[in-house]
Image (tube, rainbow, N blue to C red; front, side, top):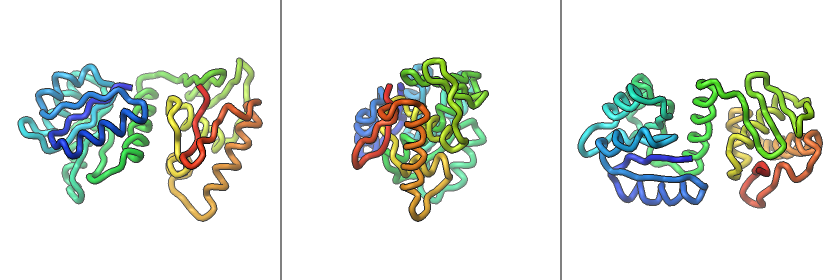
Length: 217
């Protein structure tokens, strides 16, 4: 996935770009709003800082949205709620608040691109023999229909939508259950064990020890 970072502060942009590359993203970084407008059409996701040295992020967001449906995630300073409101009203898909971690950003990128894909009418997710029709909420393995519970289905969509990247249990809890609670890690384990059984292959969902889970491509 091609990510464009529009951020003028090297101390923020460089480690962020490095972290996203480690997660498998193809990252381009620019430092001005004009450069962001020039490169935005080539990106699949734009990470856009509000405070830029030439053209402010709001102007860039509005102009990009007028010419493209590329997902835009705004970056705002802590506590500046008005920035987030204005950004969303101008067409941004999401926002993150400084300081933020790479894991949080990756989760937001995945969530935004899944929503955008659904808006554009694509209803098919594929990983190896697993095929998901998101409109019908149906799953097939090698053409064989598999019946899943709603939570099993949501866990599978989160894993397949990550495009082979490792997904932490905490992220699964946030995306599927909307938070975390005592003993929640065991809940994820139970649903994953059931998924492996129903999909007919214990290795289709792989455990990366100490990190999380990923779908086998």
